[in-house]
Image (cartoon, rainbow, N blue to C red):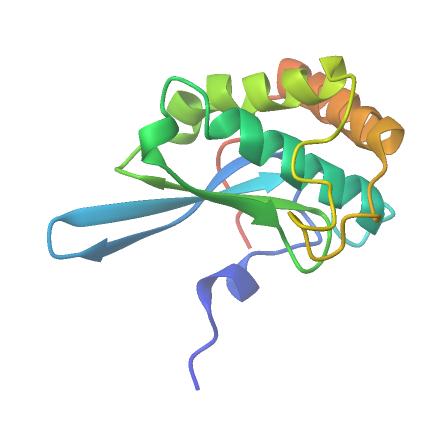
Length: 156
């Protein structure tokens, strides 16, 4: 069996950033997947599940209400818990998507109140949320984006 592309990235060199993970085409539709890498894999602790769940709820809410909301396909956590995937219609680049990623994480930092979708009838695990830790990870990630423009995967 062929190794999938994401397993071919050298995760020992990967640092937080916004990476173009893949482009999938079907007829005249393109879906671009971005790797929103928030921590350095295998060198830092993974994001705790409640914080990651809150990041998912808040970032997805902001992105589905932002200026490119009609292009947003999906935002959700990676299984390894070192970041999230953002899928969009079209062939955007990491530099083009960065303002929207930044906007989503600024929204998390500034958010106060009831987490959208965090009720029993709206979410399958509504009690597992942690806003203060989500803010911690969002602040940390925004600092990385401000200080480092990492848009290309490290060479293996």
